[in-house]
Length: 111
Image (tube, one colour):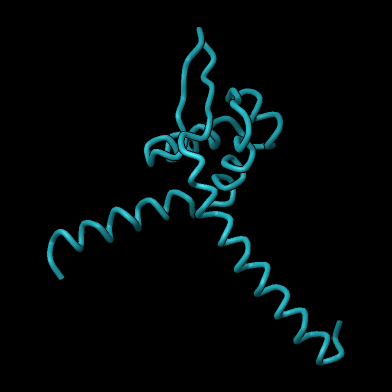
């Protein structure tokens, strides 16, 4: 494998790692159709501000979120809604797996 190919895989893996946390996925879904301040997210997502700030920084650094400051308030929004083209098929795969598992349980007489 060439250095360029290795670099491409590393970039992809780093991007996917930025999505690989429940709170980050929750933030992205929360911001799907709106912009929100950190304070609003703390209240509505029930996440402590220090932890939220770390997750927001990771999502901003990976290019998933953008931010803007208005006086002392920082607002976040989804930078590129194509991220939902990635998340939607994942949800569909998981739903399919859940359905298959449910069918097996039903067949076994457990559910």
